[in-house]
Image (cartoon, rainbow, N blue to C red; front, side):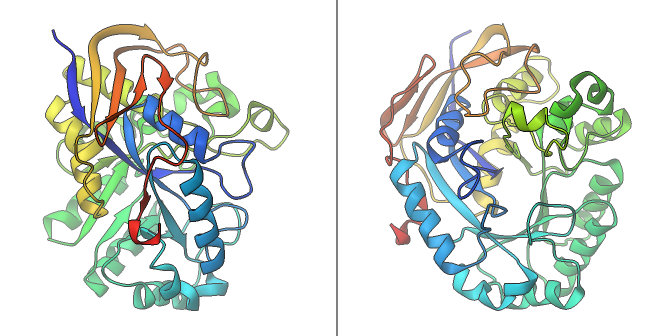
Length: 356
């Protein structure tokens, strides 16, 4: 079988840790890890330190990114109950708005109804709202999508009841989309004891029945595969109070290629979930002359050795996979080949480009 040529992938849920968490990841290491995973567009979350809730902080972070990135990057604005009135000013530099209804770091959890309604009233309709919503809060998000008749994207859906609710909402024509992560597809709560704090993330790993439900809906209800790449150092993970989150940029495509090799999903569906749909939902600009060359026959064991991510570990280390990224070409330039990043710092583009 010859090598496959895939379009450049888009990951709409990552944590690149800038500002304030550069010991875990930065724009250089995070976008290098993206290229190693065949990903040419990243969208980064706003729960940084300080969070991306003020125009000055957001613009300064965009400027830092532009000097360092190897692939294209867009930043989410964060909804902060204390700074809701700033949302219209954030809509220019930001690619989308992120609302946290459940547990998160920092001051970004929105718990009162007036603040939540203000988000839907103040955020421009031309840009999507993404939600961290678990359990009953998924119903809150569906209700808001219906009440305001505007698209809502649900991040890292992980439970059977959640995915079934989104499926029901879609059947009724409501403007909702959702993503699932590789760690919720390929790991379950049974892996938590083996991995210890390395398996701790939000949402937490689910039961086998929840994992099976995600796979059943992968061809219908699920719109995107997104990594929720959330790196922490091993020292942080092994501390008395380990933070939740796992890296995933470099392992996402090999895991899904393995599923395709095992006939769990088609290659065409993989491309929809990891390239076509993310770009459509978030209105991402095209990347002409961009592709990922993959060896679909390569069988190997995922390892912590040689990872581009600064944290240097993966919960999938030791897992056997089929399918390896050989080359990545971005806008006609070879940016990754045979395990090495060839792009120049700052050669990626910020989204939206008008801010460059």
